[in-house]
Length: 376
Image (tube, rainbow, N blue to C red; front, side):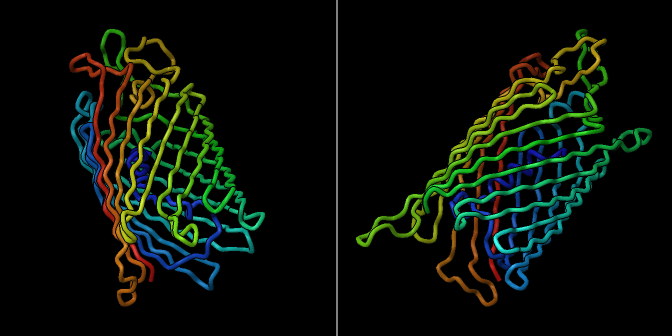
């Protein structure tokens, strides 16, 4: 949970936004993907490699395994104003599989995440079904995590329980070979120790007081996404894919009274046959939780000064470049590719101040990703 945002950034940089990835039921392929990510911003540095290996079996079954390591160094505003800079290592391992039954894809996975003060076990199950000659895909996924929260500098703190359940339902409609529309509905349910053991709130007289969150949180989100592909025009009619555009909108609300809007636009274009360039812009805006405050009364029951529960917005601009060599076979390696990505993110907080100077807080972040993958 602590580095969920960094993981999200990494995934966005790795995504191919071409239309072929929208429809769910595809024959599995043997594939290896390796990536190195770097996130730096707001006094936090996270870097590390990740690898995923997938193996096809009997044409309809695939198994996959993955591992990632994040090396974290933090001197964020919460750390420098309330504690000391720290460094730690986070490891994550995933094992999963899928099988195609007719027009239905069934998948399951297990993920273990471990760091000195946080452990997580996550189980996920999903189904996707194609209808009407694969022009319509219905999908459902449920994931459940059982986590343990600790505190490095306080052995008496022990381990607190936290759990999260996420339900996702999706409908994807192909209106033509070029145009796809997708609608998602998501429900999340958190339970247990939700707040951060290292962070404190500020009272109205500037004294540090303990944060206190409700022990349950339920959220809902709706996502609308559309993609359109532009094909190269030839004397014989439309040819190969030349470019693609995607537009997303997401609305979220929860029982903390947090409401957010996310808009995103992505564009990809082949520069030449083996070079694919992409660019995306994302805007995010949210309202504060009902019990958030930059300064809080001591007698308030629930209280938080987590900047991620405040009113804030961010602008996120990214570029990607993917290269597929003309030579598609290197011994047992097939269809190799190289990909690089860069993102710049600007965060602006409307009601969270820096205690050191009393000014509204803002921060910038840079994200770099490099990956190599192939079939075998």
